[in-house]
Length: 304
Length: 284
Ligand SMILES: Nc1ncnc2c1ncn2[C@@H]1O[C@H](COP(=O)(O)OP(=O)(O)O)[C@@H](O)[C@H]1O
Ligand SMILES: [Mg+2]
Image (cartoon, rainbow over all chains, first blue to last red):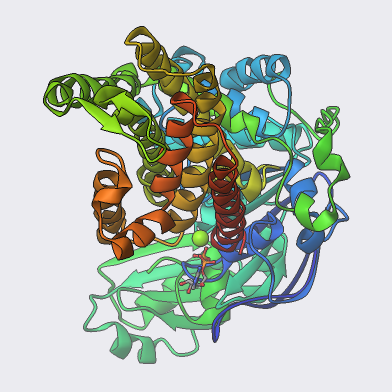
C-alpha cells in the first residue's frame, strides 16, 4: 500500500525527515511512534500527497505522489493532527460536501453520510453546528469524514492527542472496528499506550530517523527486559542511590524524578534493594512498555 | 454496514468531461470539480446569515437614490464625450453597478479567502481530497460571481424601473459585470494568497477607496488634468465603469473591446498566480 525508501524532507537546511524506510501492507495497522518534532506529520503529509518529498522514493497505492497526487488523494482517508472541519457547515453537511469534493454524487454522499454518522455515534448531532461539538465528537466526525470516499488506506495523525481518557477509549473502540473490518490504518502517536493498542507493527522515529521497527511485543522483547522496577527516592537523592544499585537487574536508568531497574523479575530486584538497606519513598513493579523501548533507544522519554 | 472496509467497492471518482482531457501537469492542479465549491458556498449561506447576503443588494440602491436623485436634482444633466446628454442618475447608475461588482468580488476574494486560508483551515481540508488548487480558485471565484450576478440583476431591474437604461444593450451589462467581477476576484485572490497579516490586508482598502472615487464614477474623466486622466485610465475600475456605462447608455463601439480585453488579461494573470500560490502553500 505504501512503500518508502530513503524518504527525506528538508525545510531549507533543516531536515525534518531524514531518510526513512518503511512499508505498509494491505489490512495492516501501521504506526509511527515518536516525540513531538520527530517528523511524523511531515511523513504523513508526504504519504498523503499534500507535501512533496525532497529525496528518496515513495509509492502510495502503486502511484508516485509527485505525479499522481489527485489520484492518490482520491483513495486515501486523512485525519490530520489538527481538526479542519468546515465550521460554516452543519455536521451532516460536512460529510456530504467533503464527499462531493471527491466527485461522488449527492445520493451516494447522503447515504454514506448517514451510515458514517451512525458509525461515529453522531446521528443525534447531524444538524448541529461543528463548533457545538466536544473535542472527542469533532475527532470522530473527522474520522467519519475521512471514510466518506471508502478509502483504501486511513491515515490518522495523532488521533487522540488532547482528548480526555474517556473520549480516547471511545475513539479507540471505533478504530478497532475499522481494523477488524480489514481497513489499512497508518497511525502516528506519541502515546505508547495508543501505539500498543492500535498498531500491529510500528517504527520508532526520532529526529526524522527510524530507531527501530517491529510489533510492539517484539520491540519490547528486543530492547527491554520483561519487567521494570520504578523507585523514587526524591529528586535530590536519585543519582547517589543509583550508584549503590550498580549490578541490580540488567540495566539501570536514572530519570530526574525516578530510577528504573530493568530486570526479568521485579520481585527479585526489589528484594535486592531492601537487602542493600535502601528505602524508596515509592516503588512499583510493572511490565516493560514501548516507553522503555524509546528511552533505551534515545535516552529520552516520549513526552517531556 | 457500519463502516467501510477495504473490500467495499470503491466508488469510482466521477470523471468530469474536460478535466480528463487535460495534460497531466494541469490535472495535478485541477479535478474539474470546482462547482462543488459553489455547492459548499450555498450550503454555508443557507446555514449562516442571510442578512449579510441581502445587504450586498441594497448598498448600491441606496447610493443611487441618495446621489442620483438627491444630488442629481442639483446637477441636472451630464454631457458625454460624444455630445449626448443624460440625466445625472443615468450617468452614475452604471458606475455604481460596476463598483458593486468590484466590491462584491473583492470582498469575497480577499477578506473571505484570507480568513479561510489562515483561520478556517478550509483549504487544507479541501486539498487533501482529489480537488486541486485550480478547483479551489475557480470554485471560490464562481461562487462570488454567482452572488454578484444576482445583485447585478436586481440593480439593473431597479435602473430599468427608474428609466435609467437608455438602450437595449443595457441587458449586456450583466455578462459585462460578470467579466468585471471575475477579473477583480482573480486578482484579489492572487494578492490575498501572498498576504500574511491583517495590516497587509488593510492596504487593499487603501487602494480601493480612491479608485472608487476617481474612476469617472461620479464625474466625467475630462474634469481631471491630462496626466491624472492617463493614470485613471490604467486602473481596472475605470475600464469597468466605461464598459458598463457604454452598454447602459447605448454607446456600443469598438472601444468596448479594449475594456473587455483588459479584464481578460486580469483574469489570466490572477488565475495563474492564485493557482501557483495555492499549490506552493498547501501542496508544497
Ligand atoms: N512547513 C514547515 N517549515 C519548516 N519547518 C517545519 C515545517 N513543518 C514542520 N517543520 C519542522 O519539522 C520538524 C518535524 O515536524 P513534524 O513532522 O510536525 O513533527 P511531529 O509530527 O512528529 O511532531 C519539526 O521540527 C518542525 O518544526
Ligand atoms: Mg505532528
